[in-house]
Image (tube, rainbow, N blue to C red; front, side):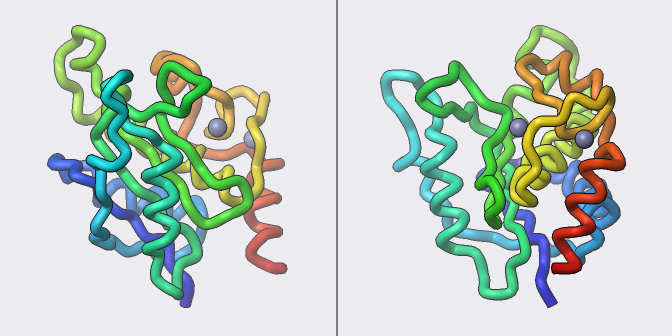
Length: 178
Ligand SMILES: [Zn+2]
Ligand SMILES: [Zn+2]
């Protein structure tokens, strides 16, 4: 039986784990399990940028995925980047197994607002579905509200839902039957 594995990466808060598991199970109709992996964050740290190289962490995740992995999602709490962008909310292997998200830029505190666990959970679920959608080969989608809408700023995440549109849904479902 293939699983979606959720891997918390030095992410202290766990209030989001249960709701995230439920949301992924519902969206991708696969059983979800938690997994602890030895991810070496230090080796992904960029001294100059004071951020963590997202692709490097993603590669570590993919390498440690168990044989019964359908998808593996790392949830970090550090500031992620890829070289061409100032920051990323997450990254995924298009049409592969691995995805990574971080709560860092989803936290209202970063924007000088009070901590809001509910909002953080919602944003994390949306971004996790978004990144996992990429692992199903989905590209960014322009249908209003679809989780696969591109998000540059955190406000963009709040504009979309935690659901994928029918067209994206069909591609995820089609993927299971082949
Ligand atoms: Zn994307
Ligand atoms: Zn869509």
